[in-house]
Length: 472
Image 1: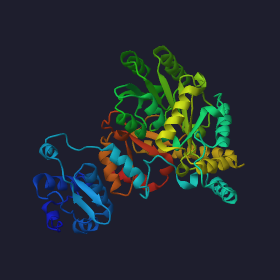
Image 2 (image 1 turned 180 degrees about the horizontal axis):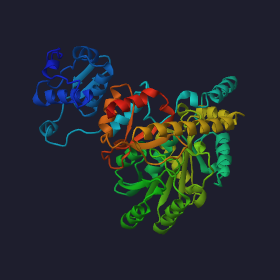
Image 3 (image 1 turned 30 degrees about the horizontal axis):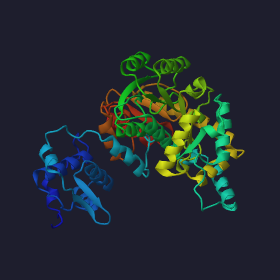
């Protein structure tokens, strides 16, 4: 079949001043061409640069549109060849145009977050700028590793590098969690730890409690496992306890995945009374609690955790060094009671053998650096200043803040004149900006006007100039 020439691209036009974002206009135009037979299966789409030049739009806009068409099953990407119309099953072609219209593909958007780290403005991302992290400690640890005789022929220990596990044990003791190094499992970041816990604890059809809004990676993992997600609404004080108790009594959940401290995306911190109530319900209704505490090191206050209240009888405690040392080294850990930990260690080996001893030793060296605690203190102070500045900017523009934690990375906010955060996020992409729309974090992928703001990426005045332009 002959490649598509420039002529089919003229079968639809773009309205640069219209209410519909340009990315969505391109997606809708090509969908219509494919559904109507104007572009047949196997036909080559115009190159990204050719389409961008023809319609006077940015290459980034066309890249986003083409990737979204791939995600929806209309295009297929072939390396070094371009994009082609996918051969689609007859039943899908018949359903085209009669089913629900595309609104927000959260899995696609999450993937684009990591693929588009090069976007100039990133107020919606989940990591901190490189110069906020412990680069000096990592470089010093790298030099020490380079000078050492590192064994490149092995896989490392199944539970992870023992000296780091011993150090984690001591760190947990400072948070009043008593554990031996044998009850610590190192993982490839906290995401692997949560995935291991989910695959061990959840069977298809099981009722599972999750924070709503919550952590997208975890929500995708649980949906893949065919769990029945029960969203527990977050409040500035922690949880909507009435809803939580009703869900537990009615559905008898198997497990509760939650992030009590400096919660992503809301930034909220669960009060001690809420933590006690969660553990009371877990004891009464016999469910496991998986506590994601990856922001503990960013908290300037000493607080109890679910794990410290329970001492790991019912709690699986998960944390990571990604937010304070570097997300690139991918070193996380979990701790729980011995029987469950042995099962999780075996599952880790089955799914990916050991984690990387090299990166674990790299993290260990950084944590032993005499500057480590000064780095944490400086990072917390810098985040507090960024929280105050970002909150003031948002309030001055008329945003409603969910809470003001003055710690951690995130603020959760919405504006009465910006009701569709998803549409705004696509429009922001056309301005080289990454936003965090609320639908991405919804337990049931519901539209939302809320947005996640990463205060460490909100220092550039252009971030708020964009919102001013949208409000006008």
